[in-house]
Length: 411
Image: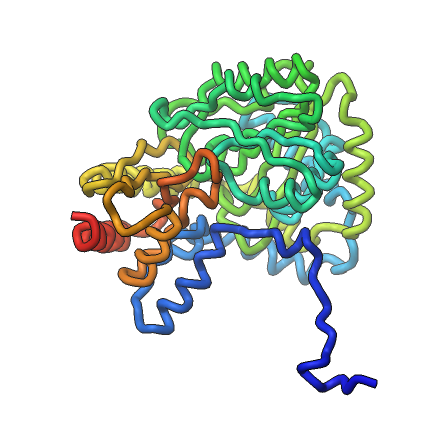
């Protein structure tokens, strides 16, 4: 009989292949960053899109509503689909933003958009099924597609055309295993905002092939240039699911509140909705007090959004100018959200990949950005993602360090 405390003979319990295959690039860089900090390097964390880590503050009336909700509700379970009063507030808000008509029955409240991605991929995918995703794109989509043994099929966003989706490539990459097409607009990681023509062309493909169009619109009120066109405004015959949430525009990232709603006049996704609800019943319900605060954030004063956008535009404009001044760096102008995706010329440098570049930048200068290949191995290489959230002095310091780093290694 083996001794249970014998480390040599002890049988190790293995994690599943699915779980060990997950690799979330945005937080992956926190490991070398922690090591650099322990070695005494002063860090500038430009890797995570969390406005509350900088000079953006959750409005007080959101917080007051949450405090009151804890005292005034029974703190018991809520509706598995999300409490009705919040779903009705979402219906009103989506009409106000986009002039669209949905019902509370079309809305599902989630623990952030991350849960919406997880549950939707778990509902749609059988092993070998394919999902079209923007390349580069938010890595949670690829992670959950792979977790459910699907296949991520990236489509190119054309950098030279302000990261416009390559609609011709999307058509060529549709197969009989394609289960959905993902849009992220405004885009993470590029800061692009897709124009109406492009969204309509993608909608036409979805209608032609009866493929659900899943549009992630969590940054829809953070737009600095041009008008915003939501996929919810497409014709009724196009099957759509819209993802949104409260982490970014509503400055509530840690509260983990999100939602999705279906627009499916022909009923193509009736079984998908049934599968979703089976999962939502199993998770019991979303956070009940936070739902009260989320509702207040939709129904109360919205002036803080204009001030947030003003600061973000100023910082994005500065970042665009300053980064393009640095030798070997080139970037497109941000039109929405709070990310930039600069390219880095790695020719005749010590770095074989963008990840090598990022890891050395963290170790030597403490500037924590994310390697572009972590957002798409096919269309994200030789880039990195940074954020435009920090105050000007922090951005200036980060770019000065970046420039010094490149001059030292690649002059």
